[in-house]
Image 1: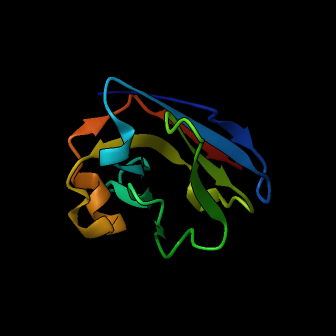
Image 2: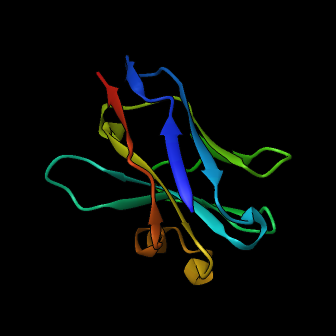
Length: 123
């Protein structure tokens, strides 16, 4: 499984960014895909998860501002981030796992497959 993130950058508070995760090397249909972030000096935090059936789940700090989605070919998972706050500044990772651990967002940090990450900075 290969995961490649893109779309990070620097934006002012209140702005938006759209992250993408290109997925290859497996059959997406059987995997949970998550976004995990890590800010300097802080632990990794599950942000959003999309299950094989398309259901989604979000962390409390981003619910209502972030949206996770997949394309029709199921090889791109996007994270639309709106009303960004300085506290959203972090490295964002795309993750994947067959288990999904019940689809719990906080368990996205347990997933076996990770991308290299993309930096998001909100000032």
